[in-house]
Image (cartoon, rainbow, N blue to C red):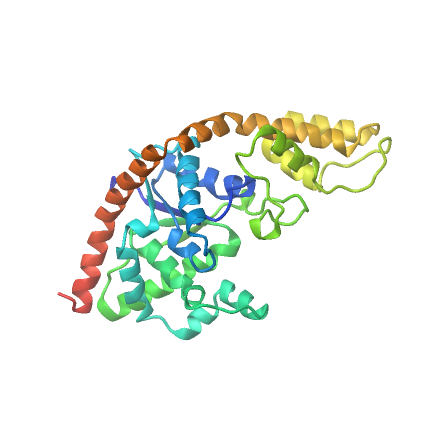
Amino acid sequence: MSSQKKRSLTGLKPTGNLHLGNYLGALKPALELSKNYNCIYFIADLHSLTQNRDAEALASQTLDQVATWLALGLDTDKHTLFRQSDVPSVTELTWYLSCVTGHGLLEKAHAFKDATAKGQEVNMGTFSYPVLMAADILLYDTDIVPVGKDQKQHVEMARDMAGSLNATYGELLKLPEPLIQEEVMTIPGLDGRKMSKSYGNEVPLFCDEKSLRKKLMSLKTDSTGLEEPKELAGTTVGELFALFATTTQYEDLAVRLAKGGMGWGHAKEELFVAVNEHVKEMRDRYNEYRKDEPLLRKELAKGAEKAQSVASQTIARVRYAVGLR
């Protein structure tokens, strides 16, 4: 990895199918950064263990994610793609950070507070999740972390932990900055809420055409009659269409709906065409990559070697500073 450009880091958990919200809110923006940053992309398999108890699914979904990054055009010669668990230094750094992190800070984490408020049992993995996430970021001397507004706290906590370690042992860890891209922060799902696997309202990124059409035709709309005029702006159909159609296509659909004589079913059909047109080539590439598991494993091995070359330098600094010589 070149040291000439600033370093960006993006991690996604391998849990379930990646969906259009993941693509627009994380994958696509992260790939855009590869034009100007030295980018690191990792598959957060350790993080998924706080809830995932299906070993076969985890293994399969990890390879799904490798195939996805490749299908979207990630150049793994210029940038780094690896599996979190392939770089054991991240758990070692997690321990060092844990030893300078107060219990009270972790109690402020959104995930912990939400789980507690819902009366859910909280395992230690969930409670210390922010420490592992901080280690992910700090281990690679990361400059920026692209996140949604709801994830900004993770970067702030990483800065707090790095600050504590630095204050105790000297300037060891770089303080990262969050990069929030306002225009793609929240992608609506089929029910109008944020697209999320936990809500069951997602549209899988690489499902086949028939499934994609069925999903999009199930979008919730109002009961306005066929002949009545309709406003595209402010609807879930309109929000999604704006993300995949051209400005001209959007304005044309808006005008036709406003005239009346056109149902929401027709608008959803045009949404399907726009989404399918956008993803079909990527979907074809994904299906080809996913068939070649030896290639996907080879990519993971290559990425792990590159990531470890950076991680080992950070860990060496920290070990020496804390007295493990």
